[in-house]
Length: 179
Image 1 (cartoon, one colour):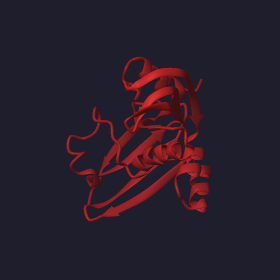
Image 2 (image 1 turned 30 degrees about the vertical axis):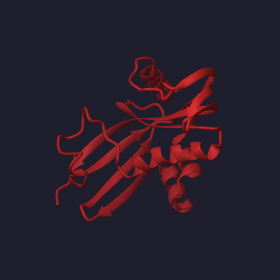
Image 3 (image 1 turned 90 degrees about the vertical axis):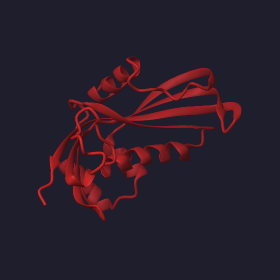
Image 4 (image 1 turned 90 degrees about the horizontal axis):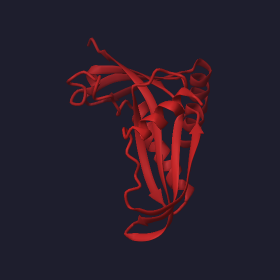
């Protein structure tokens, strides 16, 4: 079992990750899938193939972000055995159509590569209000997906369905920009 999987499963067990199954009538089965970070990016995010290959070969991806608020860089290093601080999560409940699972993973990864996730326990006090004052360096593990199958409330109707939660274990370093 990788450190990514151990970290996520221990967080679920300790109640640090809330499972979206409160309105599930019957859970028939549950399973865990592990998706390596680079495979998740390739399958769920529209990124230039050459950029993705170069990032994968170097095990580091750096993206410069510009907006009216300023400019900053988000770096992501993949290490499934990293020393993780927290998990970024996304969840989805649906009738089993795989498009929703891909969309869920895409939302999760977009938050990482744009720096829109942060650890509220370690982030600088002004990070949420002024993220462009900081560059961020993430260490990302594998994407861990827990799926529960059974009867659940989907759009106000009890029906057979699937409830997924995608978790990405992370550690992050914040670097104050000197502009």
